[in-house]
Structure formats: C-alpha cells, structure tokens
Image (cartoon, rainbow, N blue to C red; front, top):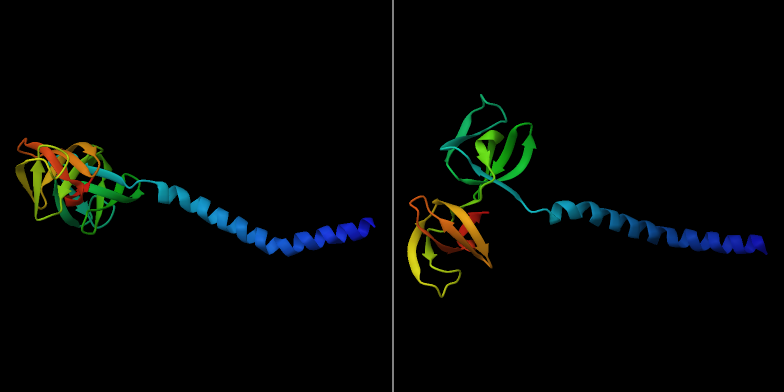
Length: 165
C-alpha cells in the first residue's frame, strides 16, 4: 500500500515536472529581464565648453565629433573612465567620463520648437528654438519641459520636440 502511494506521487511529480520547469524558466527569464527593462536610460551632458567623442575608449583615438557644452548623451556602455554614448540620431562613440556632467539638458530635435510661457499648447508662444539648439532642463511636467536657452530665455517646450533628460 505504501509503495503504491509512493508510485502515484512519483508519477504525479514526473508528469507535472515539464510544466513546473517551464513555469520556473519563464519566471527566471522575466525576473532577469526586469531590471534592465525597468531601468531608465542613463544620460550625461558635456561638462566643459566642448568634449571630443572618439572612435575608441582611448585618449589618442580618432576624434569623430566635437560637442558643445551641455549637449545631452545617452550612455550605452562603460569601460573604465570612458562612456560609450549616443545622441538622438545615432551611436556616436566614446567620451571621457570626467568631461561629462549629470546636469540635465535637452537638444531640440524638431526644425523649430515653440517656447511657451506655460506647460501646454494653450499657453502663449514667447520664443522659438532651432534644431540642434542645446537647452538646460529646469523642470519637467506631463510631456513638457521648462528650459533655459544659452541666451537666458526661459519657457516650456513639448518634450516630443526635444531629446535628453
């Protein structure tokens, strides 16, 4: 009797094992994927007057781009004191981490962006920003960013017209 009961339990475990393994594998895959999916992109901005973006993470590597102060970059990888970065258009290359800041900036990706006196399309237009103009991020609210241009003008811009943080 004990042996028959043991065989029934063994058959039950053996028949449900593939299902249990599938459930465990699914849970493990979703658990390991969660941190990277839930993690927000990391951004930095150019700290000094300019910074070189290089082809390789080395001081003597070819300079691909020179970016101006405040230009926002998304970090895609790290290697020592070097950050692999991209902008809103594509992958750029490597920038030396001490030449970057965590001060939030945006770059205008639209041809022209209206600068408004409040966070919404119903607010009055008080200026215009041009494509590739870099602005300091002061505040964010429901799809809008309060920014300051290099000339000192402040206002709100739809975040869909900007890239950065």
